[in-house]
Image (cartoon, rainbow, N blue to C red):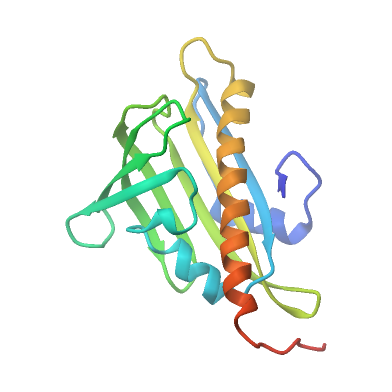
Length: 186
């Protein structure tokens, strides 16, 4: 896994430039993280697109309830497991594109310090060891809380995202292992 500050390839930079444009204000922190998953896009997307079930791969989520229809603008109430400086989060579905594999979420409430948090996650097909894989990119922008620095805020949010992306890879790769897809020789 790498963040944008690390050397990333031209393909990753192109996707970040196209889909992960945030317009951070002076008091905000932003970053993008990259994870290569050894599972096909359709399988990884089947987990990511479930706005109503983030607990399927996000280890800090204990419960999620969606209010209203499952569409853009829908809200979900998320309960956070103990150990984090939060217990609830209210999040709005901003973007869900099944063709381009893009999910956008904005946090609109809850008892945490992630004010004006918004994230975009994109999935892109790639080959890893001759098999279908997925390049996952997640970016965010968030206010820097009073008493924190941009670096502190970025470090904290990146740590959460890294954990979520590792879990997404673990769950996806276990699911892919059950599939008997043959390697593709090119």
